[in-house]
Length: 107
Image (cartoon, rainbow, N blue to C red; front, side):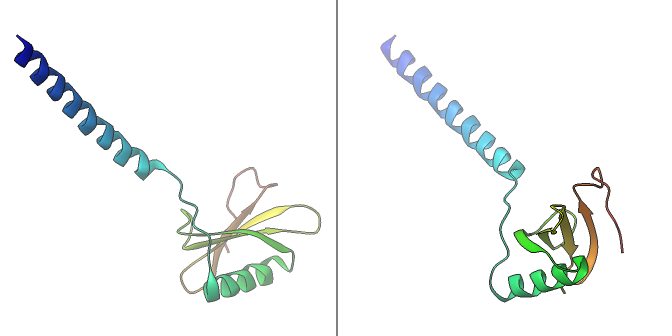
């Protein structure tokens, strides 16, 4: 009887480990890994975004944004935050801001 209990316990632990790992892998795919732009790419992306917005301050950046290859967030003097979406060659492909109610401005 004791051997059956040990086997059942080992089987239960193994199943929980497999299920736990599977949940971890799936959950990792759902996380939003907002990797900031760095180096020369940050300089180029910031310059393109600031030229597009006509100035302001870069407050955040992200590689692999869902709306473009790069995203640069710019805060304008009036407090408006504009997300500028860029392709891999630093061309503006669209933008949205906190006054748009979530709509994209395509250019």
